[in-house]
Image (cartoon, rainbow, N blue to C red):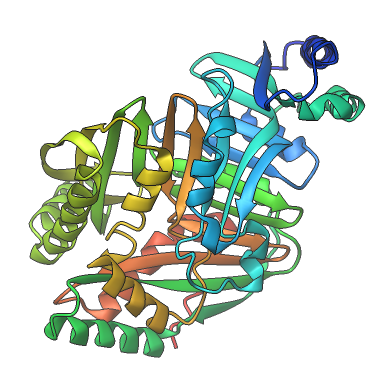
Length: 466
């Protein structure tokens, strides 16, 4: 059982007092002041951030946890939003640099962007826009053993919203105890886009492009839609996914009620701390073995695979080229090795660098996304192939997802992810296609990649290859 939160009413009361004082103080200042962010926080007792998230009012809720633990945040409401259409990103981040980085070192905007801003969005992804970054109104943060409840204010803009903010704060619910496993509605039907015949055709076109020298690698994706008997509890699904996928970045973005994008990604796009930056090249996939001997054999197979090594080499080459142009110095840490997760493994190489003065997160996002791990190589040729081959909109799948703060930023690649809309779940996953790729093997790899969601929801064995 989760211990009861230590007097949440007191935490709310203390934070409400801080908010009142901050907003009242602005009334004494002269008008016309530039906007700034003020972050106020108080300690709270033990509470699971995803349980807290589920208890908040629907609409504009989010969650993020760092890979390997150490930091979790659940948030509700909007103190500020930076969102817009494809022609504005990432230039809009540069224009708002002042407010994005205002406040103390703890101020963070959370969000992300589409995989391909140039491709027309379908209606299912419309609430997310081409990009969307939110400074939450309220945050529950967990860092190691410290827990805090915070309220973000944008001053002087929020002076006129004092009553609204305080009423919301004083009504914030705190779940008092652990809950049992969630019961999800029964699945009714599955639809694969493309089906196996269309997948074979897409892989065949890519292999033809390799023979003609137009590309070295392309990542082709599939969308699998499941309909259920009733609406899915998206926060409960995020919590179940977190529990079965240790060692991943976990994210949940809910721009409006009934719509959520969530996932468990093993892949970091980059992390910035001041001018220090880290990134990683990830490619190739094998499952974990059922025994120690099987696991060693599968690891050796991946490390010795010429096809997977070639796929990984494209990713590493591209990241070195793109990140190197922004850095004073850049190095690869060691040799290509294994990234071992609970149910699968990948090839990985890690890079570390020192950025040139003045390089922004907008510059990093523009340079690094999409890496050949989710797009291909060369980038523009691979994107053209994806646009012509994939009969669906990836939306935010495989796009950058993470946070930007005053002193740093971190983004994961939004893979191993799904889009919840009412009683429908769309799962997305892809496979890197290079010379020698086999369509059936790549199809099976994608089935394995969506197995985390499938196991939670009782979807095993519902392959509609056709």
